[in-house]
Length: 87
Image 1 (cartoon, rainbow, N blue to C red):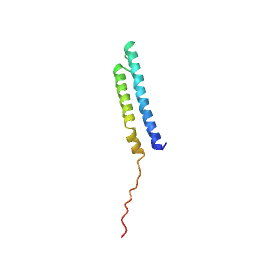
Image 2 (image 1 turned 30 degrees about the horizontal axis):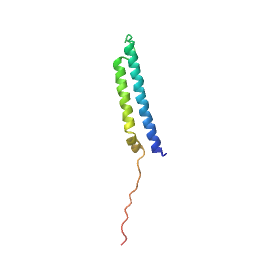
Image 3 (image 1 turned 90 degrees about the vertical axis):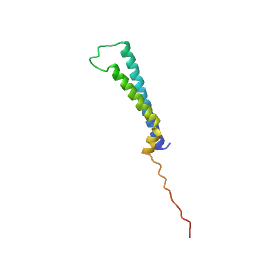
Image 4 (image 1 turned 45 degrees about the vertical axis):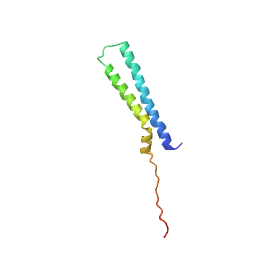
């Protein structure tokens, strides 16, 4: 595998990690709804919903745009040469 391919794996892995963080936040939200506590400190349900949306969104963007990110970091360096016919 080339470095560009490995970078794609890393970017997709980070995207998956963000999606998993969103899933973890979802379960935290479920536990908060099941067993509500006094919300004088810590996260409220709005905070969890916002964190879930942002984590899943960032994860999907990372997975979907991995090729574009790798294209920016590792551009194809093709040199086009023009040959003129001999006289």
